Image (cartoon, rainbow, N blue to C red; front, side, top):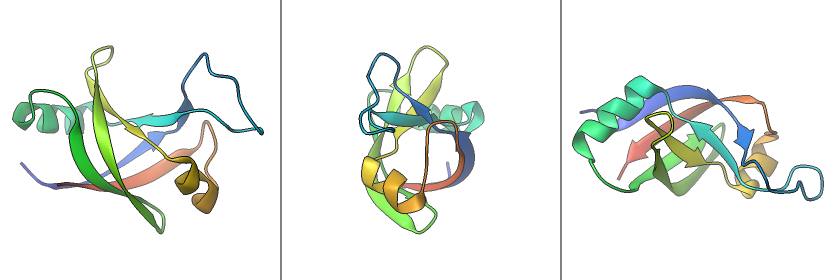
Length: 99
């Protein structure tokens, strides 16, 4: 299994949380199901630690398994969104490396 991945995904805000200051709340992307399957075949349980990059901004994160659509979720931190000018509904290119 490769340890480095590149994918593209749409940013979405966790439903049910009020927007604070225009774009608050938790924001995520769903990883491609093909990429998710490659990861799930090796990491069968729980969170998967990664080092993620969008644009010029990198951060430590964990992939969260999503049973609803058999993919992994990646939380896009507020600091990353601010630095890269990312909002709910934007398409982003993501690079990540499994630790």
